[in-house]
Length: 138
Image 1 (cartoon, rainbow, N blue to C red):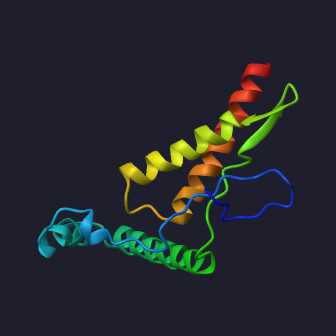
Image 2 (image 1 turned 90 degrees about the vertical axis):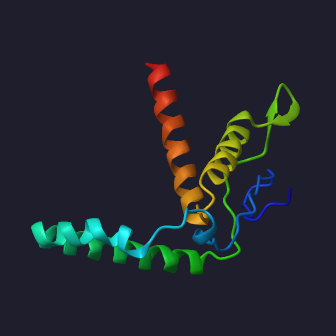
Image 3 (image 1 turned 180 degrees about the horizontal axis):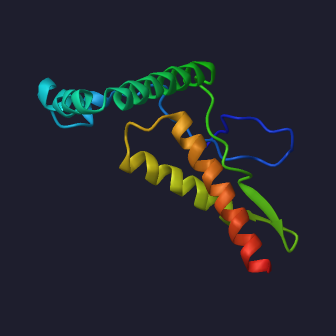
């Protein structure tokens, strides 16, 4: 697999080829339009400030998500170095392989996930690994 993000180091990286766009219409069951909006309208009557605040937050999040997706279009996700030296031999990096498998599982179970979602997954994976290594060292 050819890397989509080039690193400053000479170690090869695993690049994941994610779709530039996703079509959510194929991934959700068909619903009537009113069935989706009915809970929103009922909540709007009882708590209009909450609905407006939440709608504004969702709108801003969507705009930021679109901006980041457009800026990084065609750029893959870099889970880390594909190979590492162990006992003088070049062997597959188990950490990177696990991260890449996790991204593949994410995309298989959530087909609407995009490049940014995979980047968030990698950030969480790295944070979890750091936390796990800090806990085992104590």
